[in-house]
Length: 416
Ligand code: AMP
Image 1: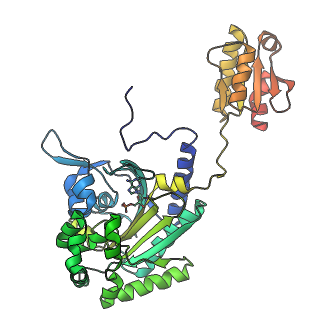
Image 2 (image 1 turned 180 degrees about the vertical axis):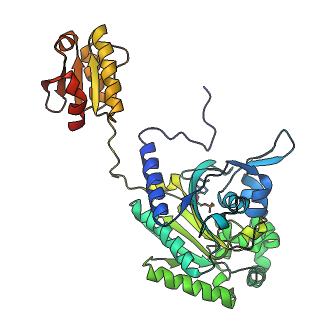
Image 3 (image 1 turned 120 degrees about the horizontal axis):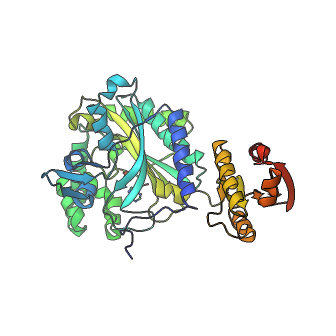
């Protein structure tokens, strides 16, 4: 027996309906806000994420599924969507093609993390990005979109956290303040944090080691170090969130685990899905497009984890009750041929019609119809064929009527 790879999962019928609901709702809401879908490849050059996501992030340092291709090129399964969408934005000059480039994508991402509830090595994201808009009203709109998505999914018990991480002008002072505030305490932190204190002090906030948390909680707050422009931007974002009636809390530790964020960062957390509580996260990335070789354009977006949204969905969600409109039962070879022709006509008319393939007894065919929850069964035997009729059994009422074969499709349509 060859089992699925650790950290991956099969999404089986019975659960996949929840995924379909999440994806269909997301597409509807994204399109309503003016976003267009763009699909990128699952494999990219490793360099895209080293440069984009950031050399000092856990994702790039520890978690990428990267390999050397036969021609010597370094390739990786994508760990996130934003750098790919930036690449596509630049490569296809979408700035010219779209008035305001507002893009979404849905698909699998790959990170070699330690699997646990809500955390997988292949997981799936809904991702949106807007390029080229500096005005803080777009931050407000993107956060409102994230909040609306979660609300439209009927997910409750969630909290929106917002922060600003500043820009390259104000961040060095903050990084220096972090190192100064840590002082000798840095020696008590985990090995990763000691390394972060040297390479990228902001990343210390990503630390999950319980023993490190009291020290990290005492560190200075980003928003106390914002430059005037970043402060004005953040004040405006908060004003727009109030205007859009989106409730939020300020979270000083919210710096996100990726290097490209500037100014606004946000996350939606669920209280009902366990330790991996972030269902969605995003922010502004004003330097990323240029860094990846494009024009100097700003950007903002978010990614939501479908696995976690599915976990957070209400138990009693009214999902479509899937069943055939009609089941066709046949007795004897001539009737079986006629039943297949009827099956064909029912399907061409757009109905969900099913049959028993192994031509068994009427009793076992009725059992199958019952299991499939078909409300109506058409029975075709030699007698029915001779009369040019089908016997119709309504399963709920256990009653039978005869209908001319020529009217069977119309009857099925009217009774579905
Ligand atoms: P990130 O790209 O790290 O900002 O993550 C955005 C969202 O993707 C998170 O809020 C999660 O919902 C989801 N996510 C990230 N990593 C994983 C993972 N390993 N397994 C499942 N979901 C994930």
